Image 1 (cartoon, rainbow, N blue to C red):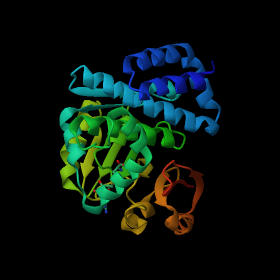
Image 2 (cartoon, protein in one colour):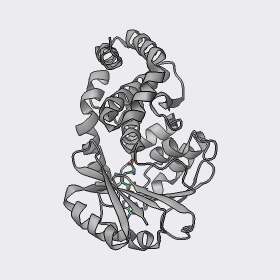
Image 3 (tube, rainbow, N blue to C red):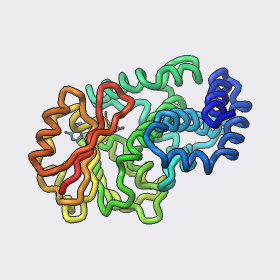
Image 4 (cartoon, helix red, strand yellow):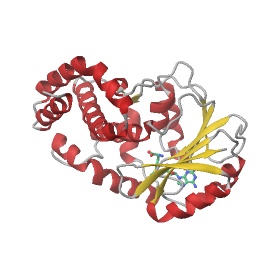
Length: 299
Ligand SMILES: C[S@@+](CC[C@H](N)C(=O)[O-])C[C@H]1O[C@@H](n2cnc3c(N)ncnc32)[C@H](O)[C@@H]1O
């Protein structure tokens, strides 16, 4: 059986509720094919869909196993699928509870609607409903979601930027995945206007051993000479216009990459705007139908 078929078979067993049998199958596939998977991943973007699917199912499976064993901390490690560096995330029950009840006016509803649309079926097959507001459900849900983001963005992320900025960081999950697991994590400025996320960001960073990141509610005091990556996921260019951070984008230096997850209706204007700042751009597709991931390199 090919590696793809083996993984799909394991996922099917998992979705039927035969969790321990699926886990055995998964372990077997991972052990047999780890090298092959990493080599395949390096070959090109045609395999991204497959990896994303695997990552999502694997994240659900790992979170479930840990939760059913009564563990308070959930650790999702998807290193096997990335050739570059470990992508992992740790969460605890308190963060999960916060994630489940987090509301940021319309921002959250947009986010939730998108999540239900893209992961609702998986979630339902595991839990029998989409009542993800329950504590445990929240953890599993967020894990799967974040792993999917990480897969989709992996190809566009530079290996070792000096300093990164995340605009609209939410609870800092993506930052934990991207910055955590490195021997020398980049320093980071995490921006969000919602002060209620601050505690979660700080706990997520601590759980993942990230010491060199600061959370702030504005774009003050950014060390532009060091900034080599700016990313914004489901925030600037999705919930609001990019000119909200015009001062930041204009201050970026040659060598910096800017990754923006924009709605399709804004795409043309955003490309034009960044071309005006002297950048080259690339397009990375995301699975979320309503956005496209654009990468702008300052030259
Ligand atoms: C849909 S959430 C996305 C969070 C995170 N990037 C993720 O993908 O999980 C949007 C976030 O943008 C934040 N936000 C909304 N307007 C903002 C602004 N003007 N500046 C910074 N953050 C903002 C919200 O508070 C919220 O945390």
